[in-house]
Length: 472
Image (cartoon, rainbow, N blue to C red; front, side, top):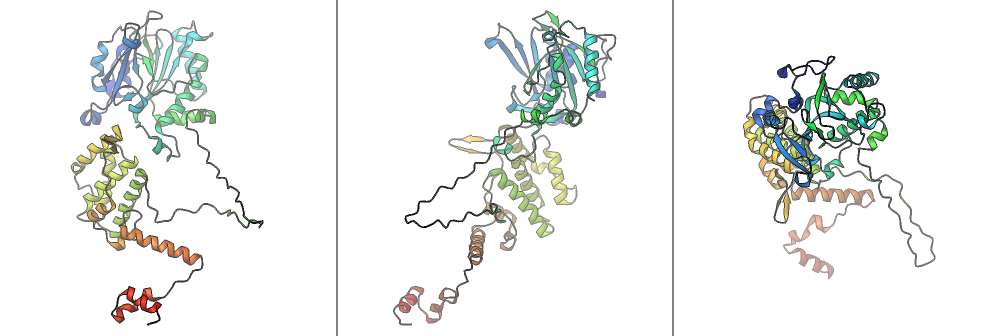
């Protein structure tokens, strides 16, 4: 456990370790903020506390609390009835769309629904839970808690795991599972190991509520209490341990189903005459995109643009006097693709800046405006203004970037997407010429190239008119 939280409280059972917090402060084991968070964005991470009961409108009352204020807030809920708290952290409210940090894997053991454990004691339950952990090479739960009727097992991460929402469009571009999908698979697998204790393998909601320790369970009149604490482990370590128990079914139950590509059907051609069809179906693979392909999708275009800027640096060798421009725009485009995010922006931007400046002698403050826009982009993604929608980051035209970086015609010939209209036309002519040559068509050498009308001192139109009439 973290040394800075080294508090001792009374031992709740004879074979348990000394605990870190008293019951009502149990969430402070995992809902914490680093020094960097407290300094730079203390109000970013929040949790929701929910009270359930017929006396509340719609059967519940929910409040969003900033993590930095949680300790003081928890005091007011001591001995509350049917009180719950989120097991993860959000930028506001309680939904997957607003998720910002994953902090634990958990099992909600409804032991009262099982024949074996409905009348179990705390000691027996803890002993059997640890046996399952040892049999499956799984670390002991960071905390074991009695909910007043069942039990909670919590594997708290040594460091919070950042998890931003991924749009459907962006998700379709990803081959590997997202962070949240990995969490859901692990949550499913770890609950599967404790099914005999009454766990639920369908408990995959990141916005899931767990009963607040120190509060009263109205079903039994008993208080939820902390029974035992053990070491925390990293999310990656737990994923690695659970990999051996993960089946294809677990992954299929979480990951989006891949859409099967539609097979295009060739419609039969009706021939006017009774002539046999000479149509030959080409079995060759689909042609690869041209190297000069210009991306239209916002994220794909942004990726191509920052790659072009990196290529431009490579072409020029050194970009002295323009370095900050390159850092700014590369960070902007990388943020659009999702490769950079607000919480880690300073660290990620520093890597780009150090690489371009070839030293650490540059000012991060020059990126403060961009940092604000990245935060807005991560939290809102799209802004609507009247009938138009746009993202808060910069999406300039090619002509603007060509002007900013003074990109020459020769440099444009090497780039993929930051090119002028003239360069687009030139590439189009080259492409069409290559197609004609491939078909065996020879280059024509006629009056169009030699322009004889200039030597005669007449217009092109007059020249062709006289030539047609045999006057030349």
